[in-house]
Length: 198
Ligand code: HEC
Image (cartoon, rainbow, N blue to C red; front, side, top):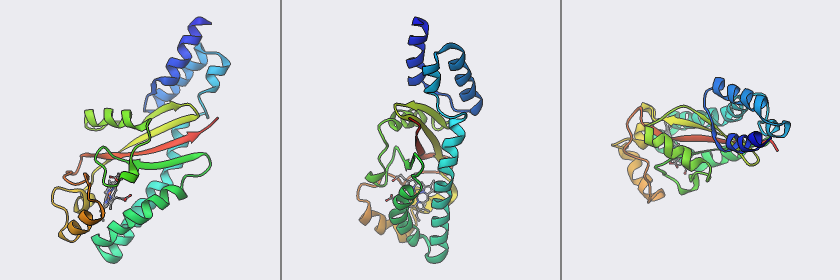
């Protein structure tokens, strides 16, 4: 029992690894070695899949809104979407025990600052220049973090030379903007999900 008591919190605190296979093997380890109580702290049968399912509509909605605005009104309209719609979309898709968001080590908007549990994971990703999605145990459930990589389509607003029509607007709306200077392939930030399971 002493073995179990030491193992359970270690499991709960450790970053449950990113790939589904590893998450499953971690879960199997918990089942094999921990008490029923400790096993119950691993929620759902596949928390990674649950977190991804909770995140998917938010990701899609952000991409759709951005594309639609750029198509309609050009890059400058895209800014308004990101600014006015992205937070609303996060709220809209934070349902059924899930809270979703996106954040970065180089923030454009302070309103997108990372939750405390995300910060060390983000820092580790930054140190390695990227990585795989992560699942982590939280006091009330699980947390999921998924890297966001810069694509060419992001560069007019996040690149080394932002599009001329957005420069003034960015400066005006985001005086503390740190989110330019990226190249395609760079780590831009992360999506995060909190899944409450207890
Ligand atoms: C049309 C301009 C525009 C384009 C294109 C754009 N973004 Fe942004 N992005 C913004 C603005 C404006 C914000 C600040 C939104 C806010 O106020 O919440 C932002 C915020 C973000 C954030 C939240 C963290 C932060 O810094 O506040 C991430 C992550 C992000 N963008 C990633 C991307 C990625 C990845 C792409 C390409 C797939 C992209 N963006 C394309 C304008 C843009």
